[in-house]
Image 1 (cartoon, rainbow, N blue to C red):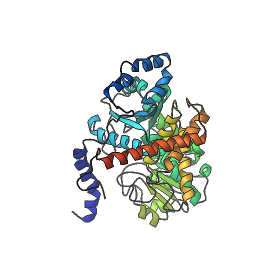
Image 2 (image 1 turned 90 degrees about the horizontal axis):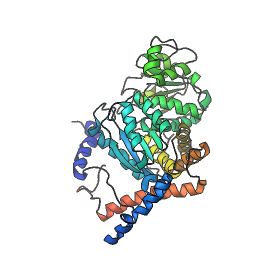
Image 3 (image 1 turned 135 degrees about the vertical axis):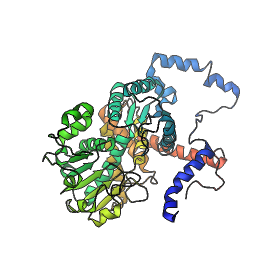
Image 4 (image 1 turned 45 degrees about the horizontal axis):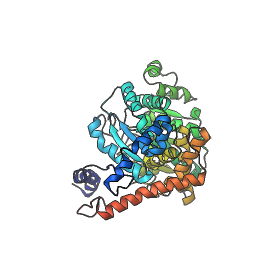
Length: 449
């Protein structure tokens, strides 16, 4: 095995090793002290009955008197897990645990992983709705398209808690953040940008939706699925309208000039390409990048291998290139978005998470990077810059207040103090548990690197 191949496989080998060593990534920890067994007269019976009676009189008090205000579910049916496909709810659990760990460490959010053995979307929705009294939000994860759109729409409409699909809005928020700064570097306006979306799954349809909310013009865009460019005269439009109305909507809204063909025709003279399709390389070719407008912006987000290697895109004339990988510059990383979006939404006890709130997160991410000094290899913050998380949380919370979906309202400074405290507390909690040995250190003294 070569050195490069060995390095690529290293995370897989370590993941199995430490899964066995730790037996999972998260656990339940108390928020209150117990100095003596008699304290349970307060934490449990008989004292707890008074708390129950108060909540019975006013259900909203469950957000004040229990940890509902900071608890969410990470929910999946296991039908589209990473690049592994339909591997089932049990096999999805390691991913959901990892997500919950990120929620805690970067957002201070208590997230509980919950794979559900139910593929029927209506029954899945009813199961999630039945758990609403226990939580302040739901993060939908790794659900196949197009039913992921249907599930998100219904849960947003039929519950009064924060519901979010990270493969949709998380990817969209990170993509928009990078796009805002890439457009600045190439002296373009979002409202005038000509964008080719390659792939019409959850990520790109949501990206289109959030970019439109932010001020983009769909008439200037084209979208490409596995059958070619979407346009209103495509022979499968009626079937699309019935089977995938979300894609149908974008077939009608985009491509005002009526382009036909495939990826090469879609990229010609465009300012931006946003690809979230199938792993490459070779899905997008260098000559197609050369056919784009001068100084093109290339977002190739497929994992584990982007649709075209970044250096190939650069050789073809791309001014800015972003991928979904951490080992290349400009990683379009959902983990920059979902922890702080939920932090902000939970801090105001929001009844939903809107696309406008996702766009607010993106603009704050872009602003943070711009203040640091954007350039071709830095258009979006990295996960190491943890100071960005409370700022994004505040932006999201303020937008929730402005839109009237917040149960509680606070000033900007108070929101920042709350978010910064919760995020710092989670990091300090981790450090304290490791230093005390409650979380054991492996014999090597490190996890990776």
